[in-house]
Length: 333
Image 1 (cartoon, one colour):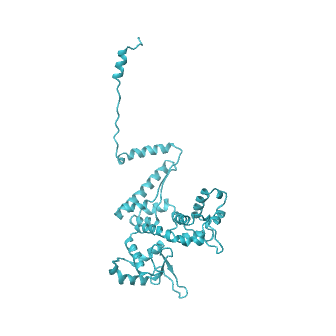
Image 2 (cartoon, rainbow, N blue to C red):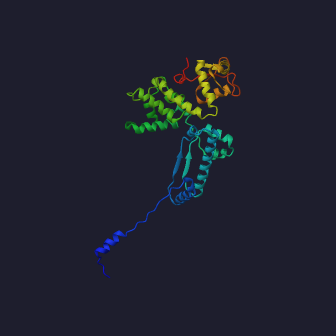
Image 3 (cartoon, rainbow, N blue to C red):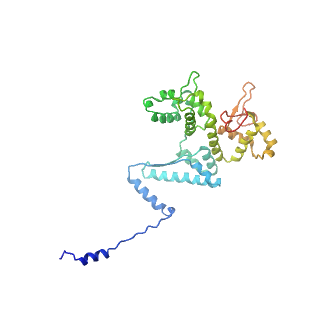
């Protein structure tokens, strides 16, 4: 066999070289879900690794879905799908999980329209309570404080060797009056980590040279903080089924210009002024009760006159606008 190639052979091979072109056509994702699911579970059966997929702020989808009933159905379907997938993961012996966070009040609303959600809630959920009875006596032992202290400790090298109690007393000194800094902020928030962090960041912007959080200066932070918190309040109200009543009630409070008032006085003011201001509140008492739960209003109890509030009656209940809201909700004090 002659292994020597002629010039013509070389020229011929270069001109007859062929290529195979492959064109991929994108598929719609819902057309390949079954194949993708089989592929993923096949891998999870073999791997020793565990994976965790977390979905957060699902309730914010409501702002993008105009129909509330449709939003509830989407949430219900989402929760049922997560339960189904987690059950399959358990069956194949893999500890991977899909995790999501939901507001308790939203779950209650969804559950009212779907009886089969109760099992998922009670069998597969963990309730996160940021408020703790320890916040009064041992605030450094609460989960919320531990999270904040962890962030502070990791950002300041000098604090790395301090335990939680030492670090808490360093950055949140109680002073002569034994003031509780954490409790102060908790009472002016929804008890969420981001509320506490926003308050502390507000303090830092005002007092950049301070090396600790001075309780005596907290009041000066309320004007800026309450404006941000009021926006957060409106976000909470938007998730309520009676949001129009709540928004109208807040506007009514501005017109009343009272720091403290009874339920009867609120109802009377509403009846006398609803046409003038265009207010429409289907049930003022329920609106007040909801604002109380949201923290906009506090409860006043007259112990000397033995005036107490029965949970089944609103007639003897007196409210007060919380001290940190007059900056955002102009109330004459």
